Length: 509
Ligand SMILES: Nc1ncnc2c1ncn2[C@@H]1O[C@H](COP(=O)(O)OP(=O)(O)O)[C@@H](O)[C@H]1O
Ligand SMILES: [Mg+2]
Image (tube, rainbow, N blue to C red; front, side, top):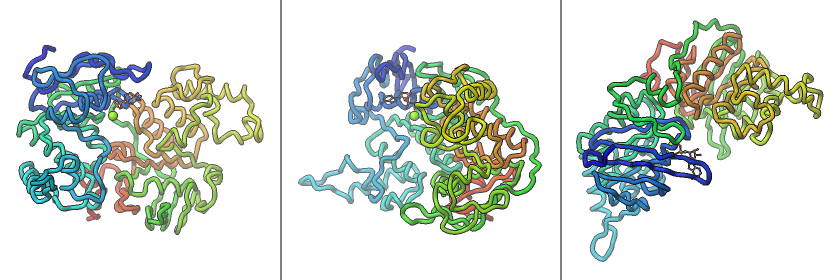
């Protein structure tokens, strides 16, 4: 692409290495003025790295940056801000106990005579911006008292306050409810109408279709091209991102639930600070059904899973598995009750990375008689067992039994965990964010496996922060808010808006 003033941003031939690893291999990006431009790629593709280079947080090893057709050097974020570039990071960088205005002017104080900070003037300027862009934010509110969606608007205001003409949003919807996402997309379109240019990083196809004019795709650090969003669809974007065809729809038959496997009554769990994270929670999962918990991160999901698996204590209530109370015993006891968990953090809980793939496949089963009693392992048996799993679950590279787990990609590590969990034929399978960080191809596999386990007769408890995943995969959808189940629906009887309201604490009808 030629360098031209038609483009707000052009990045050409960007090479970035971290040691011997090439994160960006001569990537190009051409963003037309006054458009929303999406950058799509799987986890680790290099999206954030590319934008960190534009924002002056990293330096490219090779390549050029052009703004409005002119080459620029951006060595620091201060340079980027001077050139009218603003960035809202994935994790907000606000001071919790400061007000909105204080956060916005932080590091950019308006000084009156004699260098005294003129709070009054700053507040007026913030108020003017809030009104100009129609943001629903109170300049005097304290950050910790406002919703995540509002905090994000404060970050955007902060960039606008510094004169941003080009706004970079890194995975802005990850922490938002459906309503907040809708509002954000409105704001984005409004900013475009007022002359701004927006670059949005995401791996969510639906949001690209709703928000963006063009989309550039990066696959493992390599630029795969730019498409006009009007001329494409989600399936096409997915295959460009992953490099093969993928089926995005979850196919399953109607569930035929049997007896309750998991019954939770009046469960209360406190965190280490003594605050109730799960509060008088009731939940039932029957054999042969998938119950999905919809909710925003931090509403008690982790504590719920930890209590069921006996990693933390329950302050009150009962947790029954097949009619037997298991609360406040041991993780081992949970396991003997035929409960398997696909953890949300596979590195912390799921795998031992320096161990071989074969050793990882039997982590909690080493005490089973099959592999030799007690502390000795029957390595031949172990290896043939692993070979079987690798084939059955298509863990790549094939023949990786003796390789270290750390050498496998995230998707294949997740397959290895699932293989291990599922091969024990559990009565209850807990899947906590089972597709986090996976590409669409691996997601398809995980969903198929959950449904196959259901059809085998297992009870499945799915906990996910991705509302679409919960809605697509679950037979029954339960919404968690502030540690309580605030609504339960059969699949197909509730829409995204209704669930979104409950997830945000909107209360049941
Ligand atoms: N500071 C760093 N040092 C070493 N490796 C890094 C660093 N930042 C990113 N990487 C690596 O570069 C790759 C791209 O990362 P990133 O740009 O964050 O991906 P994305 O935003 O597309 O998920 C990943 O493999 C990541 O581990
Ligand atoms: Mg990123």
